[in-house]
Length: 60
View 1 (cartoon, one colour):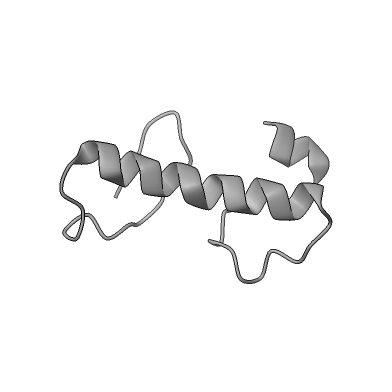
View 2 (cartoon, one colour; view 1 turned 180 degrees about the vertical axis):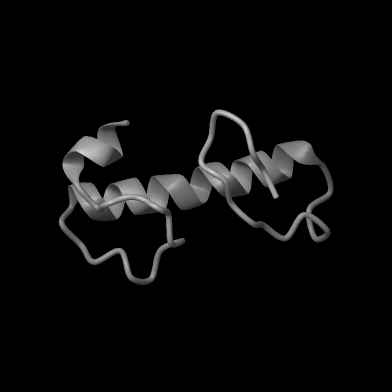
């Protein structure tokens, strides 16, 4: 589990080779969520971030 200034998230850390890969996966999942929100696409298939899918939240 990652916890810090980023929202908490459970990721498969055993399949990753290093911390950079874990952070890259987190970043990729967040970018997908943000892109869907900004494009007004449903986020049901995205990682379930604990945030309302609004432009305001995607800007944070």
